[in-house]
Image 1 (tube, helix red, strand yellow):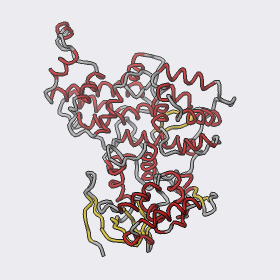
Image 2: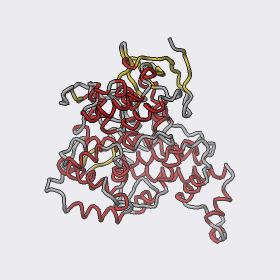
Image 3: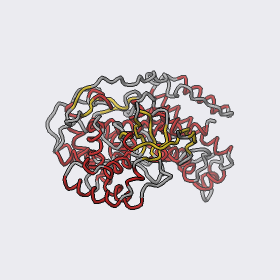
Image 4: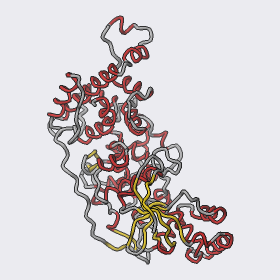
Length: 492
């Protein structure tokens, strides 16, 4: 029968129903984050083989055969007709099924391997397992996120985290709703979604077999793609611009984009790649070298990135491993605010100057007044952060930290440190009360010393002082996303 309980693991609280379920009634999840979207299937055997091939099910099965299941690690399931689909614990379920039925393994040698483990296991204890039943997928999201993201012990790779957020998007949540439900900054969510889409497009390309294997690996360095999207030089090389609705849009010929992306993902897993693109010169040297190996294609053009990819159920493998088409309706994205300030964002600062600047910023139409929007956003961050620092009693400590001998204040009694220094101090000293770890990470990225990353203070300076540099609307909204966790605190 089970009983109503409250899940209290990993700093989350979700109502679930605890019960025991026959293992035969448990289904592997066709939407499992661990399995790439182009390799998913409605076939339980196919899903089992995918997990066995890529997720080290063998060692987990050996552990279960030796010491059994831990009582405090229940599978999280959702009702699916007369059965239950496992949302959390698919590797464990795969291991249990192979111990109970070694013949499910794809090769003779693996069948023998699991038979030997099965002979040592307490099979009677595996016939029924403890589960926590949730009413729907979205109810399980906070549990799954707490177990596999942030600083958790069972943290997913960046690619697996990105797939998880994309799955929630496909279930109808907006990025802001995912952020609210999981307690992860909107900037982080949007960054993951952008790079996940780029990776998904890469999987549609005609890659060499060894390159495809590396790109499909769950440990693929997604942060390398993030660097390209965050960098103006990187985006220009790829032929994309940031876009609030789609993540990014193409501003180059599709064939050029595909050729560049194929080269980037092929190089992404090579040793030393992250060091190659660690600064402006590194990016320039890499691109110069990469250009020599690119095929000749048209360069001018544009494209919609969504035309390259399929989402979730759009294409699944049938039992024979082929593809079959499905209709899929993508969630509608609400129309963004006409200003850089998102709908519903409120300034509660009692400082007249701060509230006045915020009001002026909110009145600017970002599509028509990008320059003014950029300047005013920087002014808001500068004035509001210094006001917050003074209110919290840190003003003297901050000035002493950056003007140790007092020379600057002797010359100008009203001197204050520049914005980057203020942000760095606030992050290093953790003075932004209530800020989550990923919020501090987003704020720290603003203070990165690289003028070619527009979404930083240096990039902002480049725009402010260089008449030939103008931000796109996507650039500005991405900058807001990174600053928003800090702004929520200093404007409250």
